[in-house]
Length: 363
Image (cartoon, rainbow, N blue to C red; front, top):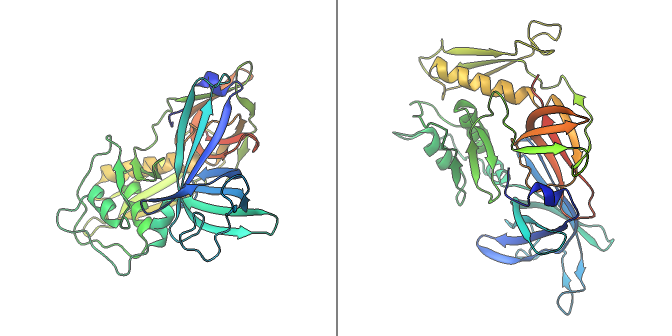
């Protein structure tokens, strides 16, 4: 969970102000006076985060003459798509205005803009993993002598990007003789799956490898109804698509053909032995060389695959602290449900409505 205002402030009447600044490399290009906008994230997407917002084309309250927020052909314009990145924060203030809390949401690469001749410019940006997805390797590459999972993750990142690792992750050597193809993001995801870890970006735009989800969530956030609560509604949804209840993890390393592990959902409505039946995903990697490693990867992927299938799309008052993989407790009509955040839709301005938080509940 991100840092920010305490529950009692967010549950009441509070001030809400977005801060969006544009950067090109290390150069600040200016603050962006957005009209409306949202940050949407989902663990099911290759690049989980997406930012969309609108800005008045002419800033009549700014410079004279008014600044034109349509980039046109200017490669150094704050909203151009030539490497410009947007740093997004939300400032929440108490009703009396005596205290304020700034929550950094993330850093986003501008990918598109459009001017619909309605007086507004629409902008789309994605999380910094988009840089990794775009920067394909020009030829296959192999880990060097003494390479480890962490050192390969750093080496595979495009220039100017850094990686952070959860202290709970235990580094280990990469096997000799393997090679990566041209997809950097796929290679980083393979490292994460083999570790096992969760591949994400943090509020500063750094690529991070988080520890895998625990077997049982220990909630860091509580969303509840009733007096001083923030919950608006919590319908349920469910899908069979992509809901694997059996994961087969194998080694594809030379000389390790017999290394395999299977993780199965053994209880509940999605048990492999029940009427749901087995829905199997097979995965292999040369980074897995022992049965213990295969078992860890299979268990982690099983938890991650089950969560988005059975979810509670909670609608609640906006909370900028919510992040992917947060353990959450949802309380409605006295019923408590625990799960993990698999997605969110965060409004950037006070007029953009409520927030949606997708809470995945393991079956």
